[in-house]
Length: 78
Image (tube, rainbow, N blue to C red; front, side):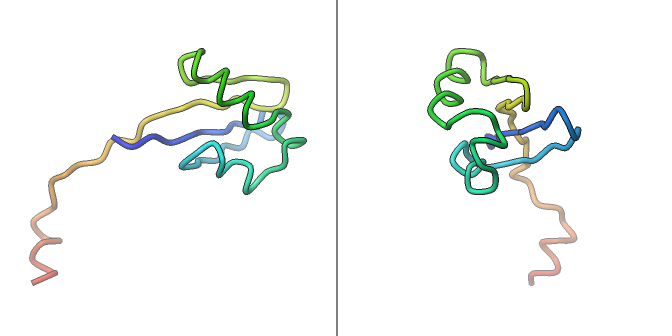
């Protein structure tokens, strides 16, 4: 499983997915998020991977992927 950070903007209803908390701040300013990275990190570590304020809901989710390869994909690579 792979960790993914989901940011939901309450005002617009848009969701964005990131590979880390730091990546959120590469795309959005702390004013847009309504918090700084340290606050989000501390609260999500104590609150089951969830942070919420007036602007956003940030949650840690897990992406399930398979280790198995589809036979047709294997055949194409030969």
